[in-house]
Length: 114
Length: 113
Image 1: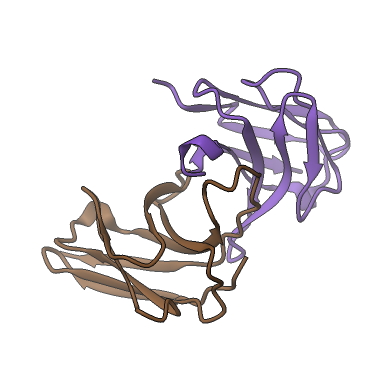
Image 2 (image 1 turned 120 degrees about the vertical axis):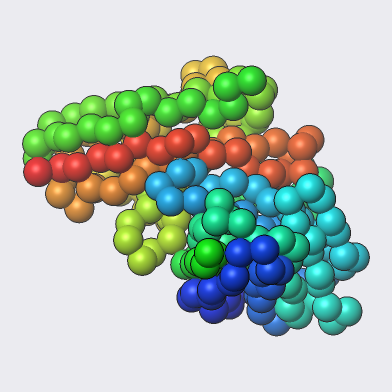
């Protein structure tokens, strides 16, 4: 799997958009970008994933650059409950049929400030 | 829908004791994994399974055994606990039929004295 680089920490004011960047310059053509988050002491939780097009769901939006070397997770209106560690992960095609080992790095610790 | 259930939530062991961390999922996922999480180190893969009767080692397998006799259950065994195994353990399940999204349990916090 491609290596990812994320800032170790970020702050965001409550109600504002939180933009979490991820660099994955060695991503290959069949690799998807996944985002998970881990709220204090809980198990990681899936947020969103995408290949090359921008994706949106009820939790967040994912913007992937045209060259696919970086992406941004956007939480449109951050709340205090969004305070968590956010992990950006790159892995092979989700429909490949085989098990894929997932590497969770340090992630970005997002602190939402009242 | 329970998802992934881990028991116990907390455990304290003495060095040399053995124990089994339980993990069960009710989503009929073929893949299951065990991770450990230590401060400042993210999650590291211990063992994983791609189906009943099939297991393999991850990044940090030493000191741990696993087996998978059913699709639902994937227990993690510590044969002789060591202080270095003090950690938070997470079990996860996923399916290639479901976008390979991993679903995690709530974790087991283990202290080895």
